[in-house]
Amino acid sequence: MRLLYSSSILGVLENISISQINVPEFYYREQEQDDEIKNLTYSMKQYGLLDPITVRNIGNYFEIVTGIRRYKASKLLGWRKILCHVINVTDKEAYEISLMSNLQHKQLDPIEEATAFKKYLYNYKWGQITELAYKIGKSHSYIHRRLKLLECSPEIIEAISQLRLEPSIGEEIGSIKNPDLKTKLVNLALENKITSKEIRKLKNALEIEDFNNSFYLNQQEDLELQQHIKEYDEKTQKLFNKMIILLKNTIRTMSPIIEDAEDNWIIHNVFMQHKNMIDKQIDILIKEKKKTN
Image 1 (cartoon, helix red, strand yellow):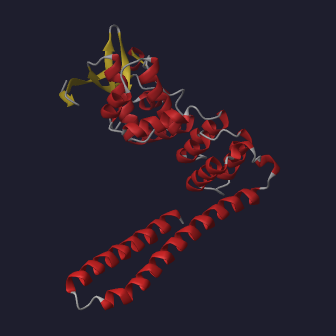
Image 2 (cartoon, one colour):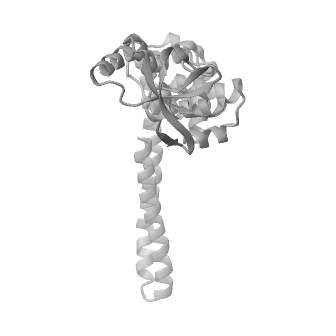
Image 3 (tube, one colour):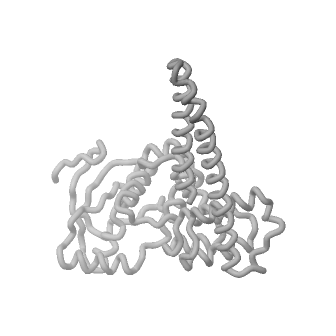
């Protein structure tokens, strides 16, 4: 056996009988996709096992830490043994290693990520969000946003899980109280007729105008919803234009005054500084206008 070091955990490589290996007790995926297993089985049949699976010793048997798909593929191939990296870790450490591995290889959909985070934090009570974020290399806000997805309606959760709906759109729609509006927005998003940015703008408009009690989307056509978003954008652009024109007019009004002060260089310099500040404010407003467009 050859000594290995993985994340500062001492381990060994060993060929272990598949009959001695079990799937983990603490896990977060409901089941592995059949297509994934079939594709991996074909690959392993052609090229063999490229990376050993990681296991830990639990008394009379071994429990998988990483590599469940490779383990299942090896069973389909009829292998009697499989090469394993055996490490000595706790339940919590095994869960963290498994989760990090799946996140790095992008093998979890957003809902599976959220479920894994929820189990770590609330089912098994292994730590706070800050600790989990540090362990898996994600931000506090990333974990919080994923957890919020689990509060969405079943139809939104299913669409996100099937990768038919972007998580960012699910996050925006999930916080809307009007069920009719929520359903219509989901349908529009699934048809790629609306973006998360447009939904966020609509939410702001609803909050400002208190449309949650007066605007019933089931009486409107899709075109009316999109028109509402468009009108909200146009109103914002007009307000920016008015402010920019006002500041430009201010500079034009200042110009003759600045010319009259040319003989007094101190006053002239003060006036020019104020003019330059207004120029900079105009540039900032133009940039902000582009962001909202």
